[in-house]
Length: 80
Image (cartoon, rainbow, N blue to C red; front, side, top):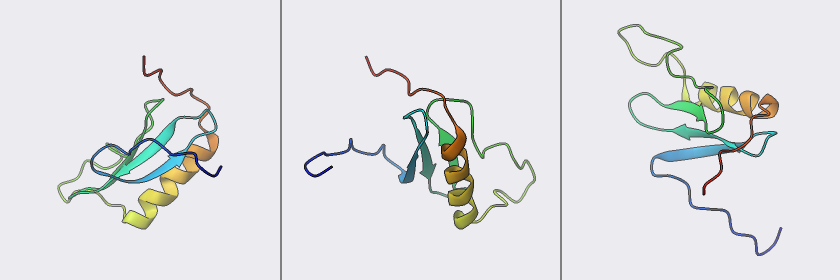
C-alpha cells in the first residue's frame, strides 16, 4: 500500500517474514545467525548443539524462516 509505513525493525534484525497469522519471523545476524518467530516458540536455535556453532548458512536460515512463516498461524502478541 502506498503511504503505509512499516514499524521499525528491532535492533539486530536483518530479515523479516510475515506469518499467515500476521506475526513475524525475524532473522538476526551475528556469530551465529538464527531465526525466531515472534508468535510461537519456533526458532532455529537449539537445532545444533555442537562445539562449532551454527551449522546453517545465512541462505539456509532465510529458507527456514520463510518456510516457517508460510505455515505458522499463531497470532501476533498484542502490543498493549
